Image (cartoon, rainbow, N blue to C red; front, side, top):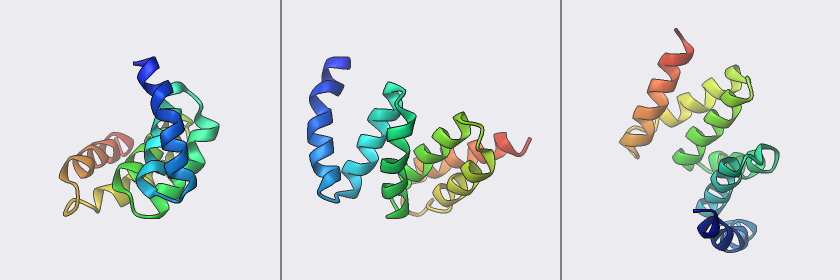
Length: 102
C-alpha cells in the first residue's frame, strides 16, 4: 500500500494545487493516513469548505484525534446533514456525533 500511496501523491498534489476539491480531500486523507496531520488539515479543510462531505467527515476525525472535539463535532454535524448526498458518510458522522455526546 505504501508504494501505491507514493505513486498517488504527486497526482493528488497536482489536482489539489489546481483547485480540484476531490484532489484536495484525497490528498488530505493520504497525508492523514501517513500521520502528517499538520499538512493534512489544510487540504481537508479546503475540500470540506467546498462542501466535500467525505472531507467534512475526515476533517472531523482528524480534529477529534487531536482532542479538538468541539470543532470536530461541527464538522461531523455538517457531514451528517449531507445524508441526502452521501448516506454512508452521513451514517458514519452520525455515529461519531453519538460517540462524542455520550
